[in-house]
Image (tube, rainbow over all chains, first blue to last red; front, side, top):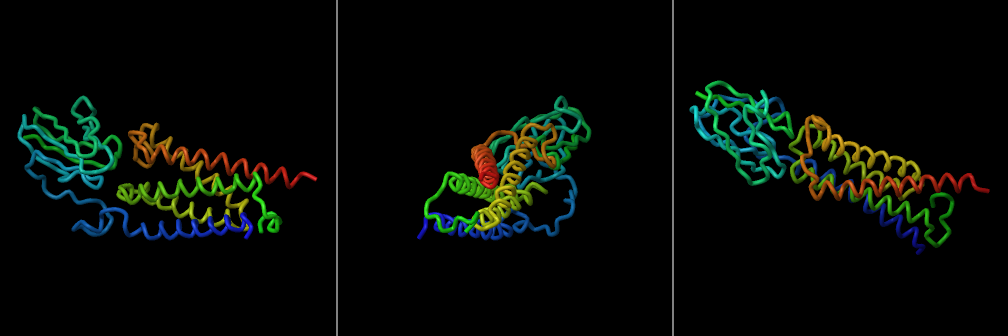
Length: 133
Length: 137
């Protein structure tokens, strides 16, 4: 058989495989199905938890709202593959963990009582709140 | 087959450009779907775009293997150039792309960028050579 015909058939098959691979990936991607929440609407924050540990998982801060006593060390642990930050919405001068790589933990200590909103500098839709009592 | 040269047994330089373009386009698609499965699926909008890139790469590779190869080449240039511009925006724009910032040039990103540049170059050269041969006596 001609080389060109062979190559055409090979790339036709590879293209079809790529289409199938992409379609099969649709239900496999993401972690929404493994969680207990349903639907794709805005995340409900729920009551603030009294904890000084925040997990960064599936591009979310968990828990989204935490309450700590003034002077407590607050730690973020990145359980995602992608790097993240926890940075005060009012600016890095207020607080920031800087980049938290996969598997890393970084902490800040907030002395001044108040409510601090924060976000991930790389993924601005990731947001959370810290209340310091 | 395509270009009315189906009976020619050999593979011309123009064909090689086409097949190289198809291979690089496939590589771009594979990296995007792999990244979708890895973690990008959790990122709003960007996740869907990565999946569409993989799907598009498959369809374009099919087109490149048929009589519609010129259309496929143009679509392939658009797909890879679009992906290249998107990664540059997400890497260097202050607010990223759809609020997604690529903080580091990770290995999959580098592989994808190299494949995107190679696909654009190979398919563009194929389109130029196709136009030249069409206009030559």
